[in-house]
Image: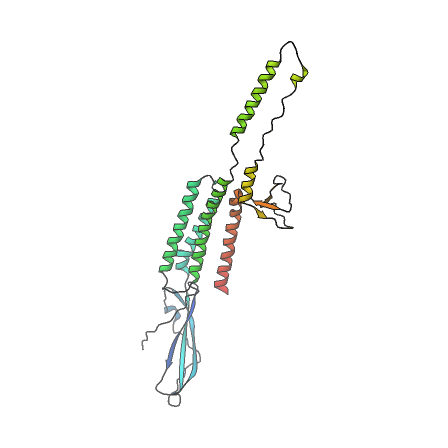
Amino acid sequence: LTINAECQLQLHNFPMDEHSCPLIFSSYGYPKEEMIYRWRKNSVEAADQKSWRLYQFDFMGLRNTTEIVQTSAGDYVVMTIYFELSRRMGYFTIQTYIPCILTVVLSWVSFWIKKDATPARTALGITTVLTMTTLSTIARKSLPRVSYVTAMDLFVTVCFLFVFAALMEYATLNYYSSCRKPPTTKKKTSLLHADSSRWIHERISLQAPSNYSLLDMRPPPPVTVTLNNSAYWQELEDTCVYECLDGKDCQSFFCCYEECKSGSWRKGHIHIDILELDSYSRVFFPTSFLLFNLVYWVGYLYL
């Protein structure tokens, strides 16, 4: 007796899915009063499980049940045998999971490249984004066209978001770095040299033998160069000002506006050091991706 049967698969946990495919035996022409089906043994066993060769699944075993189905035409005996199958992950691990993880790790290399190397960091970011797009397309081709999100879809999507976020991190860093460049001091430096040269010239002209005065030998008045440009600090305040958190020590990542050099805390406004965004990303991106993998694999494999 040869039977060709189909099994409806639920692919929510693909490729870590397990399935129980039923094969039903019953007679809907003879009720139980006329025909009764019974298993010869209480449990069904396969003759030789080693001969079961499935390329994508591991055969886990068989189980059987017997039940009475009540209908308006009568009660019927229904026997069901379940084939327990578990999908093999080797192919998908090599073709999808490992390349996605390596692509995400490769996108973090840009955090160790100088922020002035715009071509290198931009090329690396765009390349990793395009690679993730290709991997997601290939991964989707190995799946039936289902309308719900599978476990592989979730993993590939999160990896794509990490790669895209790494590219946006450099865009943010580059934008705020260009906004926060201090005003040029070339003009002020030239004025300082001009004032000093003028004072030296006047001092030499006053050192005549006659009419010598001690007042002429006074040191030049101190020349003050204003570094605290109000327009510059106002620009900083407009671009990266956040409310202080009362009672929090943010010295590591934040800097008080008026007391930035000392790093002391005060109630008011603070500034996130955008120029250190690469340093924060070197810690944040690997840590968050590691936590995601921990939750993902534990959730799908053991829960």
